Image (cartoon, rainbow, N blue to C red; front, side):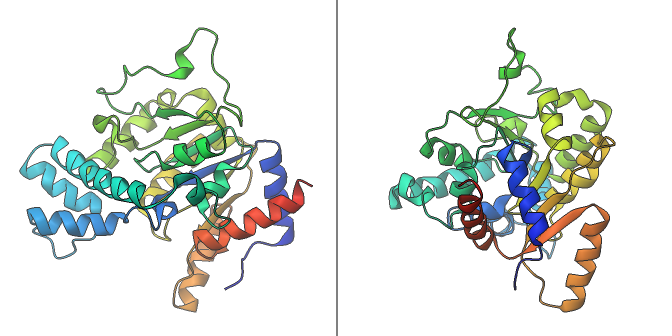
Length: 297
């Protein structure tokens, strides 16, 4: 299916990229071919540890069960262990520089853009590695959404301040990252606590990160149509931070099998001022790379 983005949408998006007013939001789908998605991890955990629910594809629910039956850190440690094993196998099977240099590799294409901030709900450092292959010096940051991570050092805490640039971009892990297991937003309780804490204290997000969310076009890549991460980000966070000057956002989505479902989702996204690119992340990466190379000439 062809992209639903019109030429005017593409031109606006490319211009925003040029001036650094575009903020990518990266979900699990950008890691296709490297890491398995959450539903597969959930099934593996349920198969190993058991689960009282018939649907074992819901990672937040399955890990909630593990947290109740063990302790809150147990599912975080298990998920990070599985991700680490997969990453090690991947590193041994590919040349990282060549991998991210592929013209249809989403992380590599996005990393090559002149952008100062990348947001992600992924726990891994793959976008960091992609940026490094483009000879950039990314700084990894996380959201200090709970008391266990509030004291972690931040580049934004320096006396002189820190201003991210395309050469030294920030990778902001909204739901935590693998180097700080306590920072992960994973279980059902974590999602609730995350939203409650963020809604009560918007200063948990550095001012520059808030600006990147409200003062730029957002580009969602790697999220499914009904993805909980996407809804938590947009409905629970972005809209609460929005000011009067709103820029359009783009969501890359696989088209549903039923035409009526596509109409529903187009209406759903339109209400949130989100334009939809119907296709997978690789389709989008290829078209974006081609259009960007022509645009910047």
